[in-house]
Amino acid sequence: MSTGTRSHPLFAHVYAHLSGRMERELGRYREELVGDLPGRVLEIGAGDGMNFAHYGPATEEVVAVEPEPYLRKKAAPRAADAVPEISVVEGTAEALPFEDDSFDVVVVCLVLCSIGDLTDALDEVKRVLKPGGSLRFFEHVRSDDPNKARIQTGLDRSGIWPRLSGGCHCSCRTVSGIEQSGFEVSEIREFETRPNWLHTSPSVLGTAVPA
Image (tube, rainbow, N blue to C red; front, side, top):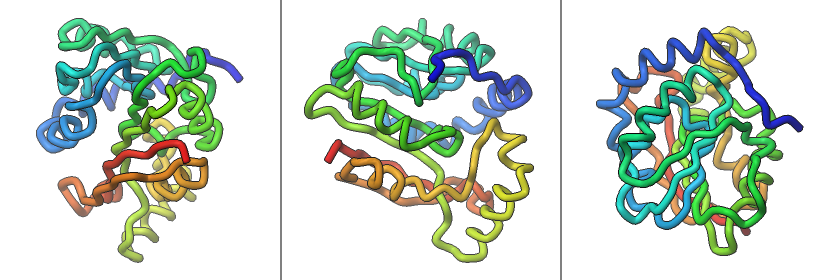
């Protein structure tokens, strides 16, 4: 497996343009996700670094992995302004460029939907977590509403949504995928982001530990 660049240039530019506008809605969830994390943290798929401002004083260091070159460039100034020391590095979730037992917490935020091989990625998470470490996640998921779920499935199968959104699949059963990869979900909160008619609004935020 390669740790090299994964480029979606059109999506990267659109995402970076929209992320600031979405922060009013998503900022409170980002704060809940990372605000009290202890020790050394790995953030996978950090994008343009919108989580960085929400890390609190308990976090000693953040290593942020992002495969898209444009988003790494956009993330750099946010890393420089953050409270903890943050380094932004190239890499992919399926082949993390770190030693075993390196991190107290691994963070994924709106990223598992676009990973090519979820099992490989979560195996890598387990590998780099220290004993007693945890996975913290904020992800959009398949809706419990059958009508919305059908729309999500249709968008994914059409190929249109994944092509426009950097490989995102909006009908993912993310929580069951985490559990099937050898994690125990120790806490979880389900909600819908606004506007709640969007196919990406059904969301979960929680913590999982290797079983």
